[in-house]
Image (cartoon, rainbow, N blue to C red; front, side, top):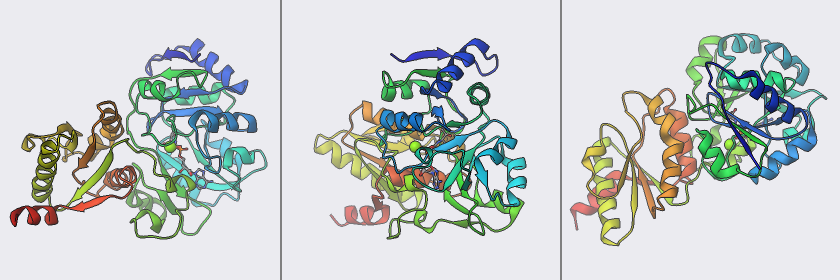
Length: 358
Ligand code: TXA
Ligand code: MG
């Protein structure tokens, strides 16, 4: 049985945190809110706890976990050969949505790192997460708290859908802030390399430490190299229905999706549409969801995974999404959307043209 406990971020009940921390110390599993997505916590220094984590998620065990800490000083206990730029990055972005990769110390078991000699480390800013990590002894491994292959959870209800009965406890701290997983920066290479885009962008790093590089396999579907973060190779974040990203200028995207939704309707299919504040009124057919406003990409990031889950519940046959600007968190949005789509894209212009000549 999974215990579910509500916690108010602004007034955290100490006894609940103690109970959850005790479960983690005993080798159990507790899901908890972070500012990015909900995490599935376990004691990061306990090999057996890592095995349970993989089993609960149904996750391949070569996919390493991120170790969450609550005190910058604790980094030294789990990582070695920490490069000098780390200090400035920690000062600026921790606590926050940044994961950094270092060579691991002997304290970290290979079960946690998926057999790698490196360890991913993050200090989350959510106060519930912070207190839980402290109560658990300082080192909590936490992948996103979803079943492997499903969109990451942004509410405790999403965690419950996927993991109820499989873990010991869920701390319900309400919905998350950001809605997409942390930026991953590999500090073992020079210059440091972004392995997963997130709320902290290349520009923000460059202001602090100069040039960073980007794992080129993230940039398109054409690359034949496997991505450097093992988890990025899986088609996760994925809804059940086939998702297609329609690309072009916005006016063409709307026309193309209108056409696709109409064709779906004629065939008796239920079509989901990912639209925005600015565009949702233009669609007549299909199940239209407003993901947020183009004026503020953060609203889109926050709603993406929830909407993918809703389409699953509503059992749509196909989903079409507009494309989003690549600025700020937009890169991370398009990265997750492309992964959810298994890199399926359609040119809006081509669809519109085809329609014209019919
Ligand atoms: O925002 C987040 O990072 C959330 C919250 C819960 O903190 N966690 C999260 O964990 O997204 P997960 O397990 O779903 O994704 C971790 C990613 C995977 O793609 C994994 O392959 C990569 O981090 N990773 C972990 N350790 C690594 C390492 N040593 N080298 C390269 N990639 C690593
Ligand atoms: Mg994940």
